[in-house]
Image 1 (cartoon, rainbow, N blue to C red):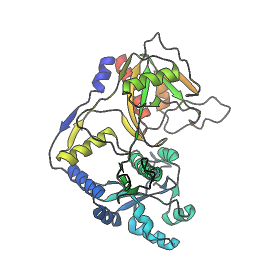
Image 2: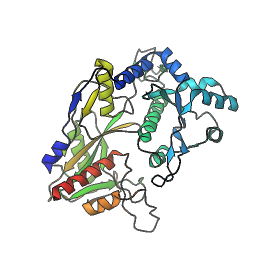
Image 3: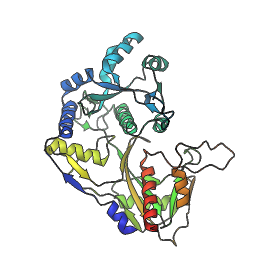
Length: 383
């Protein structure tokens, strides 16, 4: 089992052609980040994802038999939203506060804009949608849209909380794209950052350990997670967090260690996205294939960078000693229990007073991926 895990998590990167649509798109995106004039021009012809006090605007998606009750992200043309501002009697200058998220394959720029200064119900009426809390939105959106809305919110939140320089106390000023903030007094430049978090699924060979916090929805259990302390390695964080939360000592951990070039992850990116973007920007090559499994941007509590791990304990060392200040509960689950939880297509109702049905985080969450990988490993080992 350990051998197959190591094979699954072996990092592998392959370089390919130096001219591709991806490289062209990343070079275009880099120009928009660095050139205020080009960014402003792209904003005029671009699309906006709207937020109201960090809650994204969603619209009902056309219902189908396989996807009932889902929502979608409305990509609103900048010119159309300027018309909304005109109807509300507000200045069009609000649009200039939009933050660049990315650009599409067609080089159409996508921006996020918080309209918390406007009347929420009026914006919803004029734009034909509803502002929904991001945690709830994750359960309502299709997979590809969830990372986009999370990145947009993360960038907006970063700007809202970094308005002053930590060195001088003076205001900081953003560039047009929002890729950085500068303090003219101290000369400091600030870039959106993410806090590293280790998330791990622990197994004793036949069971996996999941925990829950009191704030989780009833019946939901997830992999254990904790922030990296300053100076810690991933392994040190992993061992410390597991010891603190459930009183277990790990004997093996498997994770992805990728070291190709030195680069900084922008808020909202995964390692894969950072690697592809940096290589495209710096040397004009597109990464054609790679084998990494286990990183994700997570917008809670304030833009975390999740590094996913699998870990094991010896079968004779499975007695959980719960730290109730960290977790409400932690339990070992069998393969059958986990398979039943994965078969649920939506969160169960779990009314108060009844034994809750076990369920795991939604498919977008990396904790879900860890659970799926563990199930695959168990099934392979049983063959």
